[in-house]
Length: 277
Image 1 (spheres, helix red, strand yellow):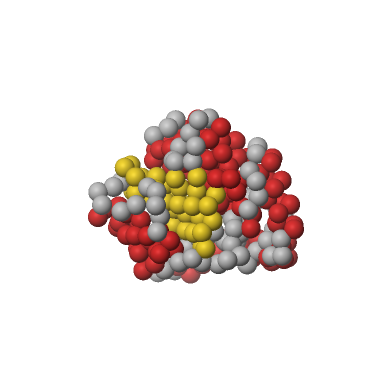
Image 2: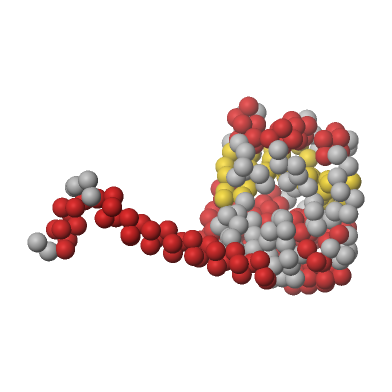
């Protein structure tokens, strides 16, 4: 009996799990070794302790391009062009690097600029050209800068817009306090629910990226509902953890789609974008 026939014969016996164990162990060990190696390398080369930054895999970028194409009803080639715009925005990249190096919090931030799924935010703003974007949760202001860069491009093309950025931390948003990006950013410090209630302009695009508890996320979407302009879009950065936006979309008669990113050479499994429109 040759080896192939022997393996097939064993597979039909009670010995099958025992015979397969060495191969299964080898595959698990190879996977764990990659994860551990990536984790150890990150521990000694990165300074970040939350809001991790990384590049996306090539396949993940392509899936993100199709996600934006479908949800914003624009050709995927156009979305790829938007990705190229922010990739090649040397002024923005140089500003983030220099502002990070000069910040008192530079000990907890990496020197290199990596946008990950935020290039999707950029492309959505470029595609939809919102007059008023509201984001909750600012932290250093990396995402705010990305949104501002897209709004500045839109403004130069005749579609002006601004972003209202809400955070409870008075130290938040230090990356977004420099011209020209701060020219389209209104940074508001305070509770997000109260700040949403105080908005005096309609909202074309809303992005939840603050307290990621189910209760708070739900309260933000409920609070902003009355502030939305016709056709306003709702986004969540919490889509890999909760189903809050999908449930809100169903209650309010919207469509919903989710994208999950795949980081390149990073231990973190990634976040995502949920979009209701």
